[in-house]
Image (cartoon, rainbow, N blue to C red; front, top):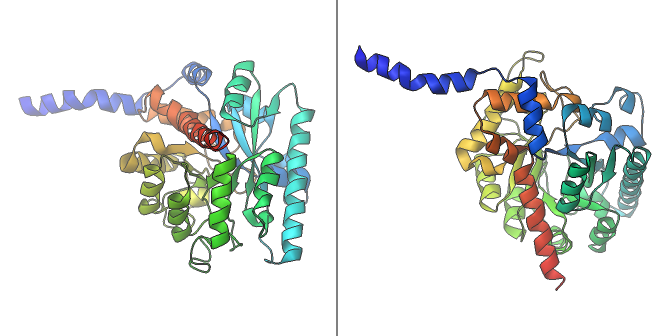
Length: 357
């Protein structure tokens, strides 16, 4: 009996931590002290090419929503749908990317009192201190690079600081999760692109890439990489999610797996029955596998993201609350929300700076 009582007394602190209710004030206070970063959204599609399906009016992303959700920085992607790998297709993709990048800059300029475009980790820290929101620009699908490595520098000069190598269809760089092995992983051109991204200071993003391409990209990159909006295959067995082998490789290189907030990537429950508990299952798996230093978040809002508990950027604080109520420390949450991603940004910037000497 005494042993049973002793066991209960030992477990009580852990149980109370895991079940404690977190106040709004606690969540707000934590966000005051940290930098929070969402590494992927598709706002540019709705903003630049509104139609019956996509429009900012019914979208999940805005600077006002970032303010309400206490999100400090978001990576806004210029999303390029995969088309034919020929001269006409590459020209279309390049124009599409340039149009979206210009549109994102215009949106930031129209809201200069609330936000600004950032180009470095130092910019993110400065903008956070000013009370504004930070917009970093990325490309989703390097299809727009065509077959010319000088395109990497062209888009870097336009402000792009991260690029997702592929989308849902093989391009000239690599094959993808939907056509595993079509290109044999990363192509010879893709190897040159990754080297050029490293040289310039552009983050390599492997979300959507095939398993082989992901592992090869990690090995080829001189800097840490990220998966900007992915889940864990061991928790939800779909091809878009990362295997443990991929997660281990990304972590070993110092990179970060940014857990998406896409219901279909995250939850095994019927639609409408999911909750942030399902999101935490992915976080917990990564933490157990490689540690808290390799977890981040990438919502994929306006591109399929959203689930019960976090429907849009205004509800990002709910993720913080869930982490706190699950027993994660303030230090751990600071790492997951932005510290880990900032570490990657700085490593990429430092490597590029060294190449310029």
